[in-house]
Amino acid sequence: MALSRRSFLGLVGVGATGAIIASPLKKLYSQSVEGKSVRVNKFGSLKSDPKGILDLPEGFQYQVISKVGETMNDGLPVPNNHDGMAAFPGKNGTTILVRNHELNPVTTRNNLPPDLPQYDRNCPGGTTTLVIDKDRSLQEHYLSLAGTNRNCSGGATPWGSWISCEEDVATPYAPPGYSLEQVLSQWGKVSVKHGYNFEVPATGKLADPIPLKAMGRFRHEAIAVCPQTGYIYQTEDQNDSCFYRFLPHQSQNLSAGGVLEAMVIKNMPKVDTGSDFRVGQPQAVEWVRLEDVDPKHDTLRYEAQAKGAAIFRRGEGICYANGELYWTCTNGGKAQVGQIFRYNTAKATVELFVESPGAGVLDYPDNLVMSPFGDLIVCEDGRGEQFLVGITPEGKYYQFARNALNNSEFAGVCFAPDGQTMFVNIYRPGLTLAIWGDW
Image (cartoon, rainbow, N blue to C red):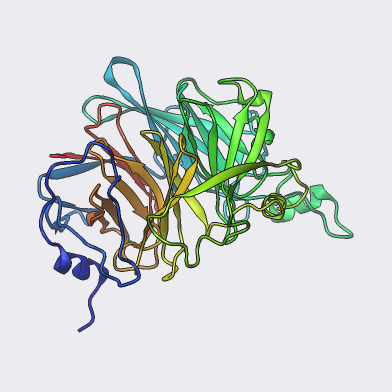
């Protein structure tokens, strides 16, 4: 009989795991070729939400803390398309969330007051900041970055800021017979180049919209910072993307520039990791320096690949934990439904961590985070029902939550500094949720 993904995952659960392994995901493995990936019903089966928003296991609860259209403290409405997000410690035990909004001028007009600091007054993307109290209630929220384009994900820095990433390399263009001003008024196109990162302090109000051009112009997805070195690792959302590393000239001052590099897998130049790349076999890597970091067109990855850089199938979410970086490739692998890679910063090795054998196990992984209890929590951005999928240190999958509202993706998963509350977004219509229970 035909089974939904929800029914399928419920049937194949094999019981709860034992104690958490101290070093997260060291024993992660996959039998993706045979399609025998082990699953576990770690927190119990999902219970139907009578409110029709979020199905969770018994013993867990949630509340909606922010939704599109609400009026913020600055008088502006909460934008739509809630995407990447990070949590920071605030005063008196509060949690500060900085949240992306993946909006573009083709589908959404920029209706912000023209006197606000904005990178491009024709672009509606940016970030909002939320302050959450100990009771998981919203204290205040406000616009914190304006005038950017398709702010997809990003990442937190150790010095208390959020790097918001543009996933669009739109360039101003006026066809023959039209001025740029006519194009902007009639079709809402961009007035400056896009494809950059922007830094947003976790505290304070509206950030200065300064593009961090030395970090590269490409379809940015997410970043993660190695706290030992200060190096910033970056993913790119393209079918033939590369994996980048930025070495800042000055610590905590990204506007001072730096060196941009791309990953090359030794003895495997230009390898396509999305095809026939074996699980669990660390490969030595090296890094090549890139020169044309702010190209006129979307060509940065071509320079990298000409120098031997590896190809990844749609690099998306990335997180750092215990000296290692984990990132998703949304449609990589034999089944073309997702992979997760790991990079060991000390050993300079990269490894295919897990490869989904099919959409019923893990469907288009996107944002992810290492949880305080040692499991990866991964947001799906697939083509049907959407789950938050956990991956244990033993390499077992489980469903932690289901979007009961619609088939919109989960995004922005993160944990409060005390580890007791998980925050996550439903992309559209934009909702930000707080989740807590017996972790």
